[in-house]
Figure 1 (cartoon, rainbow, N blue to C red):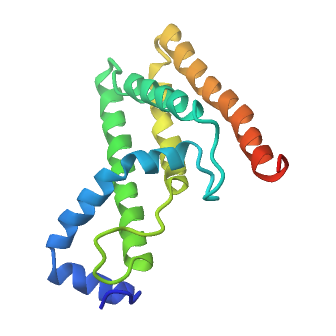
Figure 2: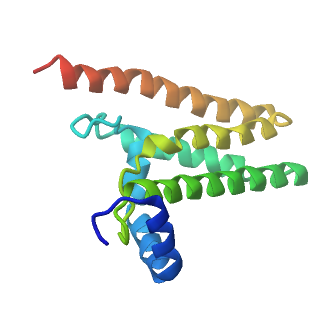
Length: 169
């Protein structure tokens, strides 16, 4: 059945061969860095990437922001963060699952056509946790500075990548 694309057959195959799920989890975990780079700056064109320093800089910014979001001192804030993170995980799973059903050949042990940009709206939603730090103006100001820094880096690196791709040849 390999080579066929059918969401119905794919789902039936997955039900009859649950061991494929473990192989898919292994595939996802081995490709997390690629997906993260896709969220950060591989725009979707295979031959266009942002400057190499952009990736570790954005990874650092995203990591700091997420750690800060999940270290809120208020119990209701922690519950909100858990809800936001759980929603992110469920939505990310749904994206992977749909891509597997629709774009991967029946019986495949890899998920084809997944791109990091599909998760960007989810990452933006995770940023909702920043508002939980308004009670501490200093922390809120730092988190806001992180977000602004990320936007400034993007405003510089994205046009640069497009310029190099289309106009410097």
